[in-house]
Image 1 (cartoon, rainbow, N blue to C red):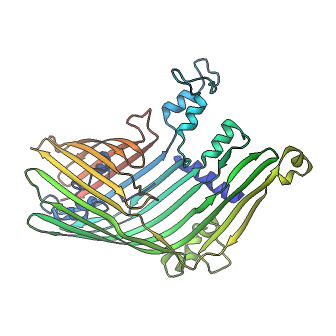
Image 2: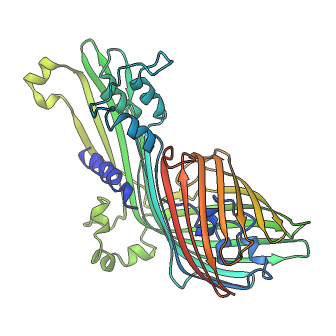
Image 3: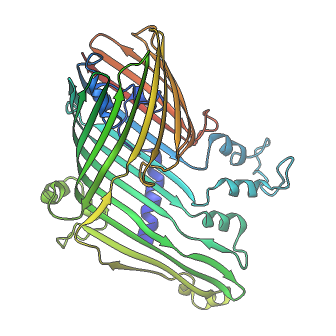
Length: 457
């Protein structure tokens, strides 16, 4: 259990340091991901491979630099932090027991109501295409990259315990979640152009580097008249090395009176088999661990041939009270851990995402875009909630395009983005920033930043 708490704490502390879905370049980030129709060349991969069919717009492209970083939570914003955790006007601690103006709710009750039922979550990740290994030529493309994803959540019950104490008869949920995933992907994409539309596909080899997570947890903390009771449990599973496959499908139309429409499904087939010896990581474990002790970091025994492990942690308390604790302090918390069997190979489904979009170009002045998307799964970078994104790109001065967008729904509820670029004859440079969970810096609960340099023709 101590190891589990340490792992969660380390992940929480590193949230400000380095999260990921299908790769998106800085232009797409500035358009708030309204990119199903307007992406071109190598930037279309991961969104809609059918856009490779627009060879009249872009015949060749190659990423020179492309980097994206994202960090977020689902509770704390700058405005909320300044209001409650920097003191009152005199610098004294804020009185959380006082009533909110115009309501019967205290400030403490309001703060607890802002924490989602499934707990306080933080997430982060990085997406980096491999240099010189991302290029498109005609209606074909070869892409590759490394994606890191992390999300941790702490049970709401812990915050209720800290702010309200252990009330007799009240049950506090102890379920928590942790997901860490690192994958390298290599993809071949193509589009088949027709007179009025294009169809396209991407076939990806997913080379899993490592994953770890709490795949089951639960239990509760209860205060009875006789003392504290708890039956909390957490099963922590991890593995290194994996082979997998992903397939994206896409469709779009040619321009219809300045309109274009498109639809795509990313990872309509997607999976990774982890933990067996038939993969690059396992076959070169000695060389890799000369640089990074990956098995030690994931608590996988280096004395066996296994590349996966699972540990069950339990916290068992029965009628623990003050008098009992004084008599035997070790009885206050009973943490136990034991290794549990894992299969030789663990199959992990790679989340699927459905997208549909439209764009309208007004002369050579600006482009309006809209995207509607939802995950077909509800884990890692996918979310089953529908997300609507609207964006505009001002292209009157082609050398300096300016773009902005807004989104509603999905994992973060509200998003706002702003981006700009410098586009020359053979070279594009783009920069973008997106706010997550709010439409201003004060209300946002996270940020996403992207920068990209691209050679084009």
